[in-house]
Amino acid sequence: MTPDSTSLQPLAGSVILVTGASRGIGRSIAGRLLAEGARVIGTSTRALSATEALPGVEYVAVDFADSSQLETFARFVAELPRLDACINNAGINRIKPLAEVTTPDFEVLMRVDLEAPFALCRAAAGVMTRCGGGRIVNVASIWSVVTKANRSLYSTAKTGLVGLTRALAAGLGAAGILVNSVSPGFVLTDLTRQSLSTEEIAQLSSQIPCRRMADPSEIAELVAFLAGPRNTYITGQNLVIDGGFTIV
Image 1 (cartoon, one colour):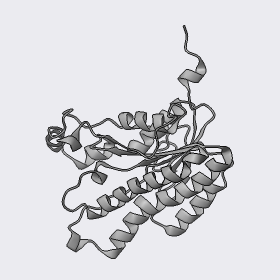
Image 2: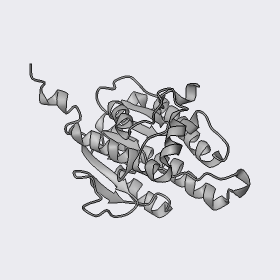
Image 3: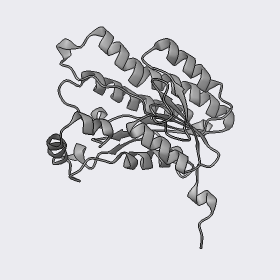
Image 4: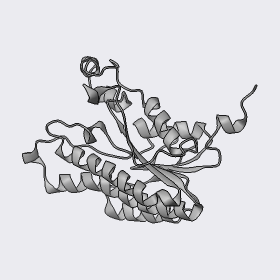
C-alpha cells in the first residue's frame, strides 16, 4: 500500500513560526517542518542572503535583544490570520562567574531567552484561541534540569522558560492549545564544531551514556511531533533529549 499524502505531510497547510531559524537546531527544525508540508515563518537576527537562507522559509529579520524590535514582531505575530504552532527556539548564552555578571548581561539574556518567548507565546495564544487551538514548543536546555558553575544567567532563563511552559499549559488547555518545552543536551551543530576541538567533543561525548552528541535532526524530530496533529494530549511537559546525560 502506498502511503497517502497526509501521512507523508501531516503538517500540510499548517502555519508555524520558528524563531532562530537561520542556523543550528532552529534551522533543522524549520527544515523538518517544511518537509512535513508546513508553511514556516522563521526569524534571524539580520537579513539573510540567498545562500544563507533555508529555501522555503519566510524569514523575518528581528533582534530580540532590542525591545522595540521584539514589540513590533510580537504585534506582527498577533495579527497573523492563522498560526498553528509557535516554536520559541532563539536564545543566547553568556557563561560568567557571578561576580562578573553585569546588569546589562542579565537584561539582554533575559530579554532574548525569556521575555521574547513570553511575548511571542502571548501573541501566538491569541491567534490560536481565535482559530480553535494550536501548539507551542519552547526550546529550553538541560541547564534547566541540572547546572554547573558560571551558568547563573542561562540556568535562570531556561528554568523560567520551563515554568512558563507549565503555567501556559494549565491556562490554555481549555482553548485546545498544548504547550511543552524541549530541553536538548549537547548537540553537534556547526557552532559546536567551530567552538570545540575534536578532542573536546570526544571528551564531552564520553560523559553521555549514548557516547555521542545529538544530531540537530533528532531535536527537530521531537519538536515536529509536539508541534503537530500527532500530539493530541501531551502538554505541560519538559522533555529532556540528551542521550542520558542528566541521569548520570
